[in-house]
Length: 576
Image (cartoon, rainbow, N blue to C red; front, side, top):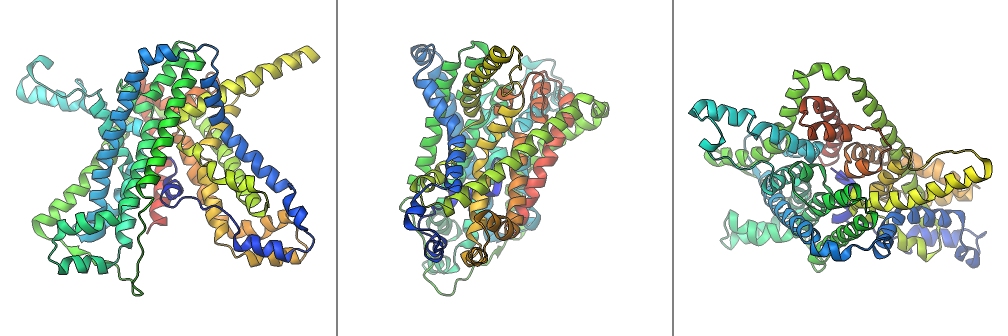
C-alpha cells in the first residue's frame, strides 16, 4: 500500500513545479527589506531544502556510482549466468501482475461507477481492503490453504479416496502463476481507486451522445468510457508494476527469482556488494522506464469538459441475473485479496493464542513503533521544510530538485538498502577508527549498528508522500495570510509555525499516518538494513513463515494487517 492516496496522486496528478506562483510574486514585490540581490543569495531555507533533497537522492546516486565503479566487476559473469533469468522473470511478473490488476481493477471500477446492483454500496469500499494486507501475507495464506497438507487437498483426497499426489493433478502453488495471482489480488485497488474516480468524473453528455448513435453498454465502455479513463488506468498500472518490482517476500516464498531476490542473493550469499549494486542499477533503470512509459502514454491525452452544466452519469440499475453477476464479479477480487488471507491468518492467530504472550512479538512491535514513528515524524518535517523552503527560495536549484525527490518512492527497498548501507558502512568504520585513534576508545558502529540506517531508508522511500501532502496543503492556503503575518513583523519561521502549520494540521496528520503504515509493512529495506538481532513485525512475519511456522507468524501478521486497515479506512473516508 506504499503511498495510498498521496502516492496515487503523485502519478495521476504529478507534483506541480513551483515556478513564479502568486505567492512568490507577491512576496517579492511586498517585502521592501529584500533587494533583488538578496533574493538571489542563498538563505537558510534554500540551503536546507537543497540539503534535504541531497539526502533523499544520495542513495540513488550511490547505487549508480557503486555499480559503475565496483571493487570487483562481475558484470560479465552476471550477464552470462543469472541476470537474464532475473530480468526475464521480472518482466513476466510485471506484465502478468499489471495486466491482471488492470483487468480486475478497471472492470470493478466500471461496475461500481456506472451500475446499481445488490451489495454495490458496501463493495465500493470493500474492494479497497486488500490494500491493508501486504502481498507476502497473502502468499503465506494461499500456500497454507492450497499446499499438499493444506485443507483443500486434504479434503479432496478424503472425498475421492486418493492416496497420494500421484493419483491426481493439482496446480503447483509455489510458482510464477501463483505469485502473479497473489500480487494482483493485493495491488489491483490502485487501479480500481484511480479508475473509479475517473469514471465518476466523466460527464453524461458523451455517454448520451454515444447512446443516441446506437451504441450499447459494451460499446460505450470501449469507445467512450475506457479512452477517457486511460490516464488513470495507466497511472494505476504503473504503481502496481513498481510495487511488484519492490516485492521480495512474495517472490522469495514462491521461489521466483527476480531482480530483487538477485540483489539479496548476490549480496548476502556471495558477499559481493558491487554485484548487488549492479543488479540494483538494473532495477532502478527498469523503474525509471516504467515511470517514463506511464507519462509518455498520456502525454497527448488531454480531456476537458466544455459544457458549463456538468452532469454526472446516472447509474443504471441491474436486477436479477445481471445484478447477481455484477455482484459476483466484484466479490471475487475482494474474497481473494482480503477475505482469504485475513481469514487464514486470523484462524492461525486464534488457534495459537499462546503466541500472543511471546516477549519477542511485543519487542518486535515496540521496535516497529519506534523506527516507524521516528521515520514518519522526520519524513513529514523534512517534507514541510523542503516545500516551504522552495516556496521562499529565489534559487532555481531547489525548484528543480523538488519533483526529483519523489524518485525515492519509485525506488524499491532493496535498491535503497544497497545505496544506503554500503556508503554508510564506510563512513561508520572511518568514524569509529578515527575516534579510536584519537581517544583510544572503540565506539563501535554507531550508524549501521543501530536503527539509524533503517530510519534513513524509510525517510527516503516514503519522502514523496510527505512532500506531496505538504505541497498540496500549502497550495490551498492563500499567500495573503503569510504576507499579512510578515507585515506584522513575523519571521519566515514564525509564519510557518503560526500560519501554515495550524491550517495544514489535518494534512500533516494524514501524512504521518500514511508514512507510518508504509514503514510497518516495508520488508526488503528492513531485511537489509536492520541491526543484528533486531526484529520488526514485518521481518518476524517473513522469518517465521519462511520456516513454515505460520502459527508463530500469525500474531505479528494480524498486527500488520490491523495497522494497514487503519490507513485504508482513512483512504476510504478521503474518497467518499
